[in-house]
Length: 173
Length: 320
Image 1: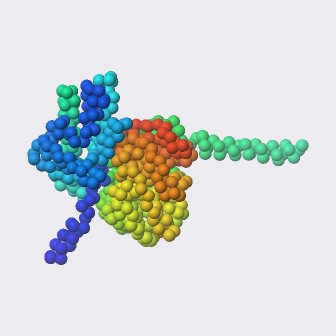
Image 2: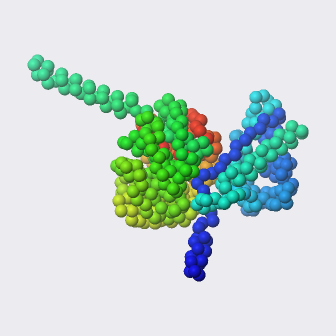
Image 3: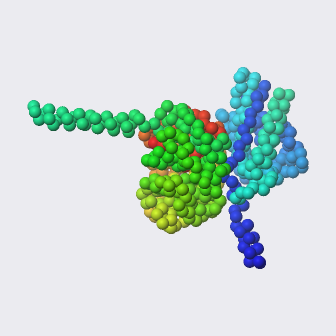
């Protein structure tokens, strides 16, 4: 019996903690904002300004670690979320970042926002794309709350609230 | 004069017919097609690479990812990681003719040179599954390293090559008896793998590098590429690498062992394939639900074509 339990424990720990299911999840949403593309991009590209527009972000601390830039966000719940800046492309008006630490029901999250021209000079389109996986990393059956649907619902909330916040902030300025 | 009528003229006629036959059937009548697995909507988009348009979308299993094409058998094998099975497509009719149940997630697929077997990496159980093409059923399995991802078949040595993502290795396997000939350390998180002549190439996702493996000496060389390289394909002395988080393609000079050009792709490019006959390079863009098509020789952008959602096509996806 003891050997069996030992074998079971060994088996559990030998499974890689970095593995995840083979299907990345995607949330891609966009919003039309009644400001110029330059104005929209100026806000979106500022990695340290997310607290000015995302309603779920209550506090922000920006940190340099070597070459890399991180932002530590305080959420409504008080939980912290750490994000790493990846890249910015001024030509395409695209910013990329990823989540590096935090108590969230999804994993391996990376995202980008692209700002493009709308139908006229005073209109722009902001598109947010997120790629992530569920938290359960092993072979099915998948426990409740660690599945694809849970992960997707959480990210959908972040993206929807974020885009609504961007629209509100940009149009009220 | 009699000789001319009896021998030379028939020879000329025969030659013309033969020429016409080969010209017609090998050049004009063949339409290369790209088969794109759309993991977000459980379909395969079929793209006509002559007209550069999407011609059909077919339902397959849930969350299709991997693919391999058996040109001589007119078949495409699609790995569905959501339903743990393989959809077999008849590429003449472009219809699913069979579903092979696996009960585990098929990650990537490759066939041997004579197209008698298809090898499938089993992501959860660390095995390779062997499928008989004649019977369309599983005939064998054998163990490999942790989280086997990309798989490729080398025709010159009859080797199977498997990238084991979570142990940072590539295994070189005898494709007849499944003995492991060599296990080599590569970069971090090896995913896509391809092979050409004496070499195998693997994309190391977390290292932003690719590793070139010499299949004779088993020596390795590392080349720096862009952010999160996902897969690599080669043509002559050029290597093409999809940089998933950089929305670009690295072009590598394989003699100099260095990147010499970066080409912009769609969003989150994952996989790629080459059509030599029509001189095309096709890249799947997971983020923009499309494929980007480039001129293989000039490395110029030709067209972006919309596919289904979350287009991936991990493997060889062009029917030449």
